[in-house]
View: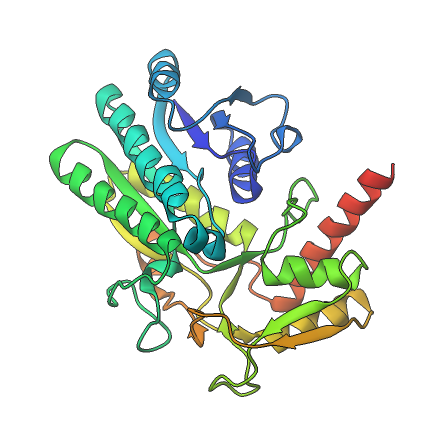
Length: 329
């Protein structure tokens, strides 16, 4: 049997493809390449350029291939963009997920792994935040992901489909073997942007808000290495195949770092100083967002292997240097 990976040419999806290949799985990728890269998918993987919302295309792929699991990464992820263009996010993240689920039900695909987000929590009342915390997303991005979680819950009650929805905290880093990483030039992730600034690709780094109730006044986030995140997906796939029940799990390390702590780590790794520009708070930024991370270990037996900020930053820096070298070549 095989795994259909949607968005498999993107940052996180491409890491899933690599780890599935490492595990000897048969993999099919469908990606419309709107933000992904064809070169990010290894040549031995069956690649289909197309949209996950194309019902006929996805239906054919599922019918013609022995697929027992879908790993759904395709979607839009930039919170400010979702505020400016909410209908686009509800289309890409909710309507197209509905179409994918309909295909899975029709073809009797039994297992589904969904790329969700900590944005479903909105402004949590306390940190670390557990899976049973109140769900009050404050952006169309968070709402669009929560709607898909709700669809999964209801579909699993009505049909023989079981799922795991993984709520990501802040994903960073790159494949330790240098095979993939965050490759979008205008990405908004803090570690990516800080590394680009350290390497001279940006003139300065903006810091939004220095008056939060945190030790240094800047926001605190839980950063998880992309390889650890994908190991959680592989564990979820194994869990479902062994008969595990549907559920939702946080993906984080259970401890946070401030914006200024991340910047210091990038400066340590790169050996370079760079300019900062301090700006006002951005509307809707939580003071802190840190995972209660015990349950994923209890349910999936998952344990992090790269839980170290300097290690995460070092891998991100190495990947960015590789990207610069490839462009120069």
